[in-house]
Length: 204
Image 1 (tube, helix red, strand yellow):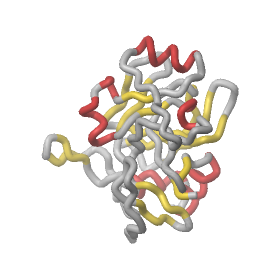
Image 2: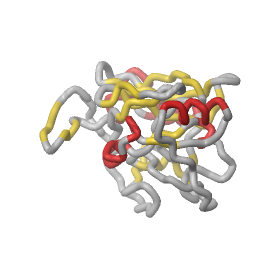
Image 3: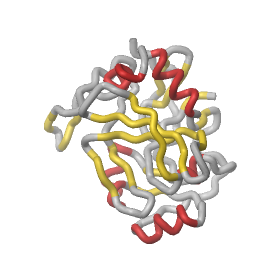
Image 4: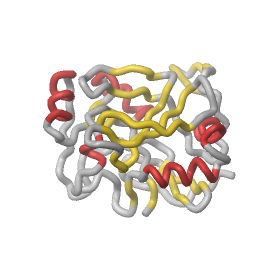
């Protein structure tokens, strides 16, 4: 059942209740930290790789094209995710690895959670196309925004969606969640902290 509980003013349209959690139903698209400081925008592969090497927060659009942000939001590196100035709006946070697992467990486990989180279809230039095979049962509305390599460059828009957690996996990586148009699984994985992934926020 789809339950809208609030309307946010920063980077979202609505939120949805899934179990005991309240999730934003769009990818994050803020360009300032919660305290008002700007998050540096990166517009080249070289600058993106440098930000990661220097452990500096950064965001970009897929292919550095703002048109891609209309549907898919912004990509952030993990250093933006954990910056103490706050990436999420007040009252929200980037979910931990355990909170992603809680979501997955509520939906019946990782083998089926992906189908429930994904949109049913994708609208491309007002033409409905298949290939994302979700049912969007709770209104999470996940889309295949792809991801950005830690060294710059992009891939998998239209077929995969990647999301950060705030939980560190190793000195160089952090835990993520992956959705694919090829199956129903919500995959727990990890990726280099300098990569560019989507962010979904969770209510405190």
